[in-house]
Image (cartoon, rainbow, N blue to C red):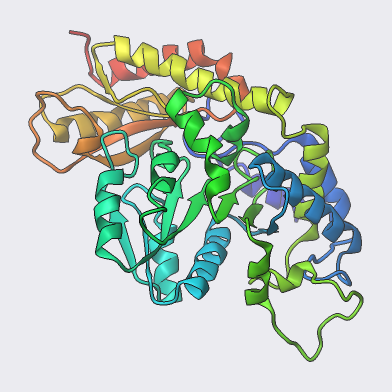
Length: 412
């Protein structure tokens, strides 16, 4: 049976290899895997202290470290299955505090926000983005002035391009309008620790503590197995909104336990143990080994972006804010460029370089004199989130060069 499992698992991309630079997949650290496996022998359930005494304590400690990273000494928070569940809890709490009011997010925010608000029955609207893929603050201000907005979702690292919404400018609107800020930092949250960000991106992250709630996904940059997300609230008193009664509930503690501050009931204690162990090995501090790994990924993205910018076969946007970059081949029309992107994608994969494709509205990509025969351009996208990517940039570029030539894109 296990031999058959091993054979079936061969049908995968090489996610852990530095030449896999497509989607947001980063191998968990060995200490996370080992700690997770140790905990699985107990199989704790962090719904209550009865189900996971040690793992519940470790979860509280690990979550407190994440809260400290964003600047909160007091907080309420817990782990959950991932960013979707974490964002659902944030928006559910927001709906309880601002009943009937609209949630707004940028057009480049993760689709989960529109899906979640639909599930919760909350009005939802999108705010256009500027040419860098960040929420357009003047448009947001006009929408807030119209009234009825309860929550603004600021995306701290979009999944398409890694754009970071201008959180400082968004927060500056609060004296004029009454709204709650939710920072969706599922992807970008750990970049709080990076020292090689552009000034405006650094200032946005420095302001994240101004949000009422924050989501961070340790299973993205935090070296954890899937699924491990985290929801954090600045005001611990929102815990009152979770209170519930159950005829068979646990009575081993008079203190509010993790099961009383989560919408999920059963939750794997093993995920908390793995995160706790990893954060003990790699403290969440600037200048530490963990932070250096984040900086390496961004350095790799900046290096590859500069090579693409200097090559007249490609069009690029502004320099990446985090470790995600997007580009496309030049062509006579947007349709032709989109088709060439797909060809390069296939040629690169045949050479074991695995990229991704992303469809972007034309205002996010400077297509220049291309014939605009469609509204979106299919671009190539790369997520250079592994620290090893910095050392592999030369090889990635060589393969991309070969794949681009093989796809029929010639230098001018």
